[in-house]
Image (tube, rainbow, N blue to C red; front, side, top):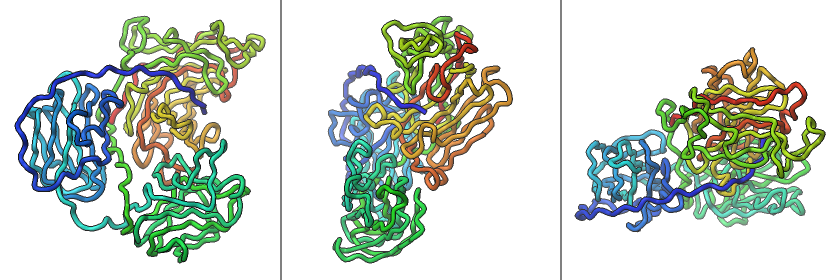
Length: 568
């Protein structure tokens, strides 16, 4: 329901340590297959100084370093199926005493090929036997008070078998189109956006000369391929009539699929054809606009495929990974290692000014209290407040906290026990925002997961909602739940279980709303939730959805949070 604004984040200083000298390891039977390959990690101590990529860059002067907690993991995508025969670990002083090496074909189901509880650090050469595309270092026990840190994570082996059958061939491949759009309405909507495996970016035909028939987009697979499947994830500007065509020379085309009943959203087409080039050739538009695709994916055998980014590990909804129990002394502020206050006016025509934790304090009874007050902030600017005769100086204060830069994650069970504020004009919320927002990805392309929203003008209702480029604001994909009594009458536990194929939303253990990825993509638009998110708590006053307070609204208004927990 929101637009977003930026805030500044501090940078954690790096820990300097000394590399231990050890003897050289034995020679592996296979060749080095991990260097320069895509790599992901559970966390980083400092993403700029100690990124996951440093562990596979072949440079023993750079390193990956995790946050200071257990467990952690580091995972490399080899880009194909390999028989792995050795893993070498070049530890910095912050090493693992307990860890395992795991191999997987799909980054979801893992086989353990090595495990120890007596790791000694230094340089370790681990003989292993396993076959797969992904190799993961699962770190369970730290040897120091710090995190885990590796100068190098090297995997050795030999390629196994031939080309992957029915694999994704189009990722990152060059694309051309009849026209493309790049203006204020669709910035950078170039053909390559349809092959970038990013469901929040799209190709669109030009608004000046491309809203005509026919319109087309072509992918160069890099080499001849047998094409068996095509996936089209349409923007609302879709084709009602189109052909899927293949060609060896980008000039003479063979049609392998044709329809006059295109329905938009996500269409998965089983096809059979051979060629280096694959084209969507649209001949009838669904509306007065042009053609636009979030994704144009081609699957089959052959071509010159580039491996897509590895999938995040599957979630564990029972293992506690992070929490805040808010057990501080009366009047103490939220833990600065976990939460950052956002300071200034709100968004969405909200009327409060968010303070630097003046409105967010512990009550000494195990709760964080975010208090909304009728309190003027001199020199501030907010939308007109009807209760104050239309004053545009912010007439209310409150609190908004987030974990960006301190804790973010992909997939898991997220829950909080909360007693909401209520009354006309109140808008308490517990939600998540895509971490790439602070890397330049605008809202709603970053994705938003609202676990709890309550608007005081609906005293018995709470809401859970998703927001993405194709469904956001008042058009978000969500559901209300009528509690049968006033929402602010008692504490309730609000939760989401978030995985790669669905989300399930709960209140007090009641699963009242489920989002299935396939259903979402075939009825509303892309699923944009396979990347890290961070947490937000806020107690807003006014705004587009709840409207402003009126004479019946009582202040101050407290939002009480007993705990926030993340299992993953």
